[in-house]
Amino acid sequence: MDTALAPAAGSLATDKPSFRRVDVTLVFTVLALSVLGLLVVYSATHQAQTELNRDPSFFVKRQAFALVVAIVVMAGVALVDYQWVKIYAPFIYLVTVVMLVLVQTGLGTTSLGAQRWFQIPGFQLSPSQFARLGLIVMIAAYLSERQRELEFRNVLAVAILAAVPMFLVFIQPDFGTSIILATIMLAPLVVAGAKVRHLLVLGLVAAVGIFGAFQLNIVKDYQIQRLTSFLDPQNDALSSGYNRLQSEIAIGSGGLTGRGYLKGTQTNLNFVPAQRTDFIFTVVGEEFGFAGSVALLGLFALLLWRAFRIALLAKDPFGTFVAVGVASMFAIQLFINVGMTIGIMPITGIPLPFLSYGGSALIADFIGVGMLLSIYARRM
Image 1: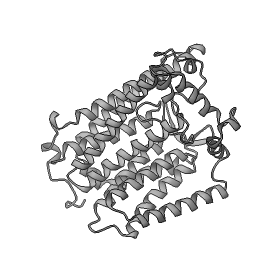
Image 2: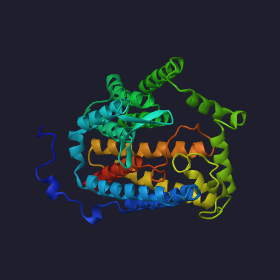
Image 3: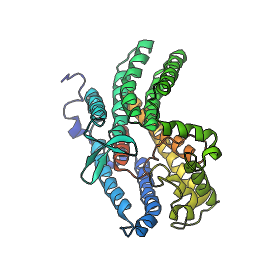
Image 4: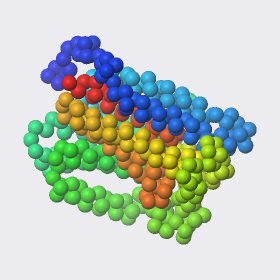
């Protein structure tokens, strides 16, 4: 190992962050979001489980277990000097890419036409959720080593690093996570000072690639229907446009203060599909109303503010780029998820961080928070 790149000897032993070096506001925010997530997951699932004579708290128990694991992992990541992550960034990136390849083989599990998971007893592991983190640390490590102004070849190198997991995720198919990966690529490039003309070239190449995907039938029919139903949901109200219409009805019925916890009719009658995952925000809108939704968005705004503040406080470029990558990961998920539930964005299957049901996404999100805490603790 190159000792020049390694943290100073004994730094892990002597640089342990004290309580005052913990971003308490950030920790409180993600825990508050996660607890709210448990509440709305239970609301979204308990009635259907009861009708099937199953444990009404089945899903919330699984999510609570994932939350405990996520918190432990977050604490472990926060205690480790993030400079070690820079050293092993290529390995982390390679592992996530290999996982994306393997999930497309017989080792992967197919559900609803998508092959995105490894089935582990009692758990489904989604490698695309961890690929987000692998790409963040790889791009951050690469950009942090550039001593001069970014040239087009540097921008191209970053685009290639992102293109590999983006393609592997896109063919699962998972268009939503592909968008997240693209955002993770762009945000550090902008912060690093990439020229506008270089970014425009990337945009043109991406547009050509998307057009080619349509021509080669890589884009599935249901994905095309989601895009067309976004433009005219009434034209296909019983199929692709159904999710959007029911989502808007649920949120609109909440009014100013909501119907009350566990009292949402759209939620209890299961009118909104995938409500515990992609459409979890509809539970907040219906049961807590406009006021509750604004409060939730306020928590996310607090999370993003702390992440960007950590990016500004980081003592080195690597820490800055990692924090920017994590912040952009949360920001694009929030924007698209909430946007698709209120009808201003196409339905792409992106979960809402810390609220949507899913152990892989929750653990990956907490790892991202753990990296932010590590950067904050070692900002001086």
